Structure formats: structure tokens, C-alpha cells
Figure 1 (spheres, rainbow, N blue to C red):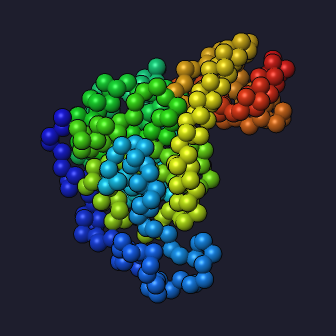
Figure 2: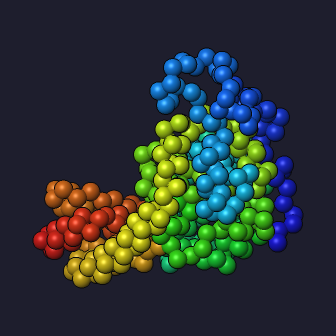
Figure 3: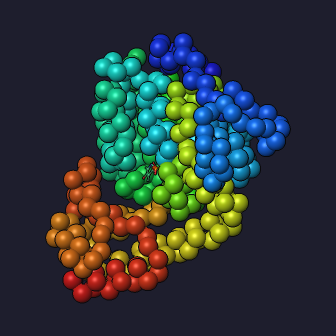
Length: 350
Ligand SMILES: *Cc1c(COP(=O)(O)O)cnc(C)c1O
């Protein structure tokens, strides 16, 4: 249990005094919503499904997520992709040209992009050789201006999950916010960190509908954190940050959670099969274990193999410029027939 943590010490001064922008739709919400005549927001009154502004708090989506994840809606914030959620964290907690964050390369590129946009220093502590957080090194880099620590688990592009003990130690010893990016958690055997929110007031978890839920196109990211943190983020988010079409699509998908589960099982089965087949290819030197919907492989010559696949109509990701990823390629698990085609071509170019 963490006791010496006070969120007020982390919020930027100008954000503390901010009142959230109050939109027309914020000011009037009532049980009789459906029966009211709305002449308050200068909308076009002719119904076409999207003529009204969307619910700024996305309550229907949150209620479904709340049921599925067994967490109170007050602990949930939705964003235009997790990228927006991550950006809100920077804007709420990191003073430009003063504060810093810690990231653990090789990892998701957006943390660094967002740090640059927000003029926040990004202290990079490379993962250990087996792709785990170097806890001692991370803690030694922390100073009074370190506000956020990003842990991507399962990690992109390495595919592995971080050690639970390492994450707990960081949650206990670091007094800024620990952001666990769980974009790939649904493909992992490891449990998510949602049930640790009470224990660690500095824990922030991000998830997304872009990967396992098959909805990258609607841009819907989810943040789970204490009510206090969620309320700070709510005070700075754009009022209508999740549009009506996205909310409708998300609701339909979340109502059909069984279909999502079935696809996850298929993808995990395909991952297992693909892993086996990739190991039989001569020029593939290593297939890293994966808790995600992609596989990181090490080959003899990443640039050459990348180009060969490209000219055969298959696009993968060359990650060989990342630390610890020399000659590494990242391959997303596709459908059974896509994976079969990939293996066929890999055998041909051998
Ligand atoms: C794909 C991915 C996301 C998803 O971002 P969205 O903006 O929600 O699409 C987040 N984090 C990581 C590590 C990812 O790989």
C-alpha cells in the first residue's frame, strides 16, 4: 500500500485553477432527456442520427466498459484513441521546459512524440537484455521534476509483459504517475492492473479499442485511474472528444463481447501457429515470445528481408533501428490465410 502520495503535488498550477468548459450538453442532463425539446446548442433540429452533439461524458460506452471490466464509471475517461489520453496526461501533469518523463526503449513511439510536442524532456532508460525494466536505473534517474513513468506491458515492439514485481516496486518507490499502457493486454495471459487502482493512487492504466476489439478506425482509447486523476483529465479534455459515430460503434461492439472474445482466441491460436512456422525458416534467427498480437523476430538482414516481403505484397515493420532490436522485424498476426501466404513467401525468398 502506498501512503506518501498526493496528487495535488503533481498537477500543473494553471490546471489546478481551471474549471472545465461547460458545453450546452453538460449543463442540461436529466432523467427525462428523451422527452425534452432541445433548443440550447444551435444544432440543426432535423433528425439524421448525428445532428445532435454527442454525449460529452460518453456515459453509455462507460457503463458497458464498467460492467465488462468491473470498475466504477468514475474511474474511466475516454479519449480519441489512447494517443489523446496520453496527451492529456502530459498536459495535466508536465510543465513545459521544466518537467520530465521516463520511458523504456525499445517501446511505443508516441510517448517520445508527445514529450517533444509538449516540450517535456524524455529520459530514456533502455530495457535489460531480456526486455525488462531496469528498476534500479529507473529510480536513479528520477528527480523532483519527473512526473510520468511509461510502462508498456505487453511491450510494443518486444511483445513481452513486464515482471509484476518490477512494476510493483516502481509503483511503490516512484512518487509520480506510473502509466501502464495495456494496449495488448487482451492477448496476454497476465492479468490487467485494474484491481490495483485502490492500492496504488499513482497508477494510471490505458487501454484501447484499437487492437483486440478490432476498432482502430473509430479512435477510442480508455484511461482507468483514481477518481481524482480522472477528474483532472476531465477538466482539460475537449468537450466532444469522442464523436457520436464512434460511441455508437463502440456500444454495438461491447454489447457483442462474445464475438470479440472469439476473435481474440483465434488470433492467439494463429500466433502460436505462426511462431512455430517462423522458427522453421532458415534466415530467422530468433522468434521472441509474445503476449501480444504480433511477433518480433530477429533475422540475418532486416532491411533485405523487409524489402523482399514488400516486393511480394506483404508489409511488416522494420524495428532494427531500435535499441536491443538489431535486425528485428515486427509482424502482426493476420488471418489464417494471410499468415499462410506470409510463410509461403518467407520460404520462397529463403
Ligand atoms: C497500438 C497502440 C496503442 C493504441 O493507440 P490508439 O491511439 O488507442 O489507437 C497504444 N499503445 C500502444 C503501445 C500501442 O501499440
